[in-house]
Image: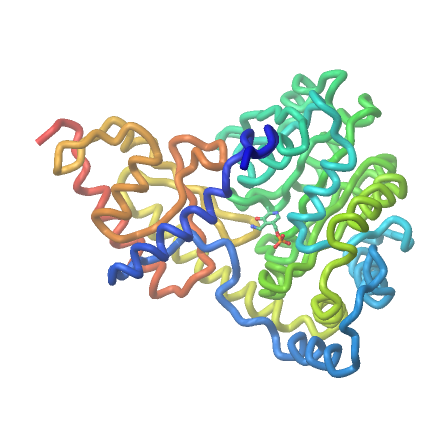
Length: 403
Ligand code: PMP
């Protein structure tokens, strides 16, 4: 069967590919320390599971409105009001099968061939491919570590053209854990106010997994004058350990939300009614699960940052949110393995970790960050500690000259 051009333009997600490789190696009997995982290692809270079971028993097993059940929409509106003081009426809210699907539909609803989407790098792997799949052109803007891996107003300004439709802002970010402060968002907003044709897609999926003081700000609240062109996306996957439930949401301008709903009405009709009931319970129920898990992530983050910092040749910045660290391994590029192989790239480096020490991480190039690799600390402190020791051992074997 011939596939369409839009499929040939894209590749499967590297994190899914890495997970597959880990599964294969495990099935060969190898013990892999897996730091590739992009999801919480906690179970969904009991009260959320109970809400789903109740929904099944109450017969909530039919199609729902395309833009979600009234209960879920009220829960989302409540969260955005409470957290950011934002007011969203029903016609400005939509839900989908994960934030991933909501973001994809927003791009599908707005991009024509050649439209540009500014994607600050390092980026979540899916943005460029989602843009390509929807006939757009990703404009990758390098945001170096020296600038905190964040888009600066100057870089934003010089990347905007007449064809720019969107700029994507993922905060806190995957894979860096970097997050924009209110001041930084204000400065970006100043640039955007000069370019009324540019929309902003904010991906706030890690907003509650947050370690710094105060709350993580949202652009829509920081600059109300952008309200008619910010599309805020979020979901319950990460905060409530609900990745398998597939439930995300979007809030933004009514015309965009209507277009997304039209697409959704032809694609899936609506997300699962049971997951919607569970998500409503997660958003409106007790939040101690979130507080408790964030403290566990924080301890793991601190341990990992310390251990990486103690490894000669490696360095990383501390994540403000999320559960990833982007580790700089540039010093090892050009070095030689004991077997005589040369480490040419971050991909060679991560292969060396996997093959010699059975530690799985994802190479930075997958995120537009060559010379880096990503560690997920959504795993136990024991695994993280052992993995960091093994990473240090693998680094120590790399020499400047072939042996
Ligand atoms: N955005 C980012 C930055 C992510 O890391 C992920 C999950 N890997 C998503 C969106 C997708 O989340 P969901 O499970 O809601 O589709």
